[in-house]
Amino acid sequence: MSVIKDPSLAPSGLQKINWVKANMPVLSNIESEFLKEKPFDGIKITLSVHMEAKTAYLVTVLASGGASVYATGSNPLSTQDDVAAALASFDNVEVFAVHGASPEEYESHIEAALACRPEVVIDDGGDLVNMLHTKRQDLAANVRGGCEETTTGILRLRAMEKENALMFPMIAVNNARTKYLFDNRYGTGQSVWDGINRTTNLIVAGKTVVVAGYGWCGKGVAMRAKGFGAKVVITEIDPVKALEAHMDGFTVMPMKKAAALGDLFITVTGCRDVITKEHFPLMKDGAVLCNAGHFDVEVSRSDLELVCVKKETRRANIVGYTLPNGKTLNLLGEGRLVNLAAGDGHPAEIMDLSFALQALSAAYLLENYAKLGRKVIDVPAEIDDYVARAKLGSIPVDFDELTEAQKEYLKSWNA
Image 1 (spheres, rainbow, N blue to C red):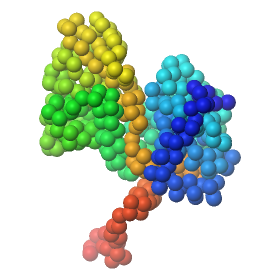
Image 2 (image 1 turned 135 degrees about the vertical axis):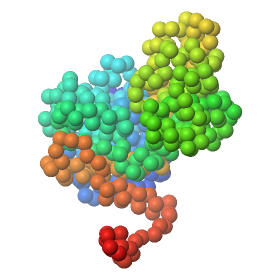
Image 3 (image 1 turned 90 degrees about the vertical axis):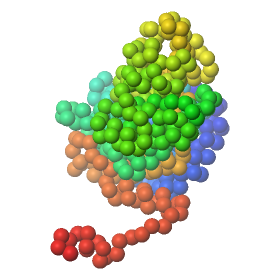
């Protein structure tokens, strides 16, 4: 039985789901096919996802394909209670998610979603798969495989694969071109700034924005900061990415040096302890700190709690920490994903691509799991290509195709 805050919130959540559905044409087409073909008939699917409208629509698409779906959150602050209530009203769907859940409640919701003993899992960050490999291995017997949405989750899966600990195949959805080139870059680039701007109501132009990490997400955040008129500083640990950031026109330096210059700090690394107690005293009074990586470990909130002499809520989703030197630093969304803890996440048109990949990859997994092995695998190229073509067709945008002569030329070595 679903665990949600208030069933009466469903009408508001349903409005949100219907709005994104109208702007996700690729996933809508897949839903039509699933209704006819029922690829998940009799299958139980458990998802740990950000409980907002776009992911809710993905859940309903899987249910349209015949699945019994059990959905839980992947971040306590990204759950929207009205969306959870609306989703719980659909046939063949159970929801275990409440906004602001405590760590214990959050874990219990994941456990409840897994109690069905699913055949397929869809994860966002790795908490679901982690539980199946640690605390509740007994619930993993029926799992044929799953899909992972994020860079952070795939890092965890690769570590498990390296140690031969992975119990079933996992498709690395994040590594598909139609995921990281668009979701990570354009989706993160826009949604992070949506969250920051609606939360702070402060101007960006003329300020110094420090972006920690220059992967695809960091590139998107930096690109939008530049478009807003900010002076952008990049911090990196990868020499190739640092060089790329330099050649893209950004200033590159270590965080210890950037700490004194930034007006606004955004971490997008997937690692922990990016901004810590050694950096806080160096920062300007009034500096804004936020995180766009999956877990709330990049800006060390524990360090802020340790060193501050005063803590107060200054505005919704903004907590001010006053240091012994009298400066106050402002942390957004508890250091959790700012685009979801303080916003609505990526635009619907972007998630149309990512969730089309998820839906099709789940169907592919069911057909092929027996021969995939216990490892992390890429999204098949034909699925990646199909999603791109379908998206172009929905816009619509025409593009060239190779002639037969060109195909032969590209395959030959002595032409």
